[in-house]
Image 1 (cartoon, rainbow, N blue to C red):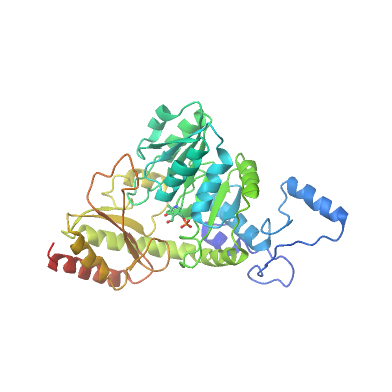
Image 2 (cartoon, rainbow, N blue to C red):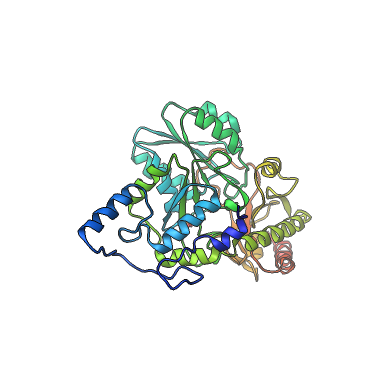
Length: 391
Ligand SMILES: Cc1ncc(COP(=O)(O)O)c(C=O)c1O
C-alpha cells in the first residue's frame, strides 16, 4: 500500500497513447472520433456502465480523468469529478443531492459564498437551509427534520477556525438518512480523511493547496460509492468541468503538495506562536495550537495543520489597521489562500452569520513558503506601524 506522498508522485500518470512520458501528455479536445457505428454504441454502453471511457468533450478525457482518479484516492473516496472552481464544486455537490422541498443543515462557519448559494439559489428552488452552530457535534440530531437531506460541514470554519466533530455529526446524520458533505479545502486528504470520518461527498477547492500556485481556479467533488451515481449524473447534466490546462496545472501542483503542506504547517506554527507573544494580539485561532479550543478534536481526527489561521486583534482603529496592512512588504492583500506566497485578509463576518463571532476584529493570514523569520519581521514592522499611528 503506497503512502500518500508516494501517491502524490505516482497517481494520475497513466499514459494514454505512447510514448510513455512521465506526465500525461496534454490533450485538448471537444470531439472524440469513433471508428464505426458499432464502436460508438459500444462506447455509449460502456460509459453508461460507469467505465472510464472518453465519449465527448471533458468527460473522461485524459487530463481530467488522471486528476479525478488521483484526487479521489488522496481524499479517500471512490470517484471524483472536476468543476471550474471551488464554489462551482460546492454548488455541484449540493445540486447532486437536493430537490425542491428538502432541508439543508449547513455550518454557520462556512465559506461565505457557499452560504449565499443556499440563501439564494437553493431558496429559489424551494430548498430551505438552517445554519447551525459549528460546535454542535452530536447535538445536530435535534435539528434534523424528516426532509433534511444534507448535513454540510467545513472544518475548520472559514475565518473563525472552529473544529467540528465530524464523526459525531455523521453518526447523527446517517441515522436519519441524510448525506454528509464536507468542504475539505484547509486540511486536504493529506491531513484529514473526511470519508473515514463519515463524509459521503467531499468538496475540494483545489484552487488552494492542490494547485498551490495561485494561477488556477478549479474544484473537485469526491463521492463515496453510495453517492457516486448521483454526483456523476448531476455533473453531466450541469455540464461544468475544468479545462484540460487547469487539470494539467493542478496535477503538477499536486506533485509537491506533501512537501508544501509540511512546510506551511511548520512555518505557520512558528509564526502563530510568535504572534501569541505580542501584546496587540488577543488570540490566535489555529487548531494546531494547544491553547485553541478545537485542539483536542483536531489532534484526534487530523494528521496535520496547514498554513491558514486568524488572529484576533485587540481593539484598534481603521487607520491603525490600514497602516499595518498597507505597509506589508511580504504579505499580499488578497482574497485567496493556499498558494506559495503569504497573504493577509481582514475577515468580514457581516455575511449573515447567526452564531456570531463574539470576539474582536479578525485578520486572516495564509502563511506561504517564504522563510518564516522574514515573515515575522514583516509582521513585527506592521505591528510597530500600528502602534505609531494615531487612532
Ligand atoms: C473554504 C473554501 N471553500 C471554497 C472556496 C471556493 O473556491 P474557489 O475560489 O476556487 O471558487 C474557498 C475560496 O476561498 C474557500 O476558502
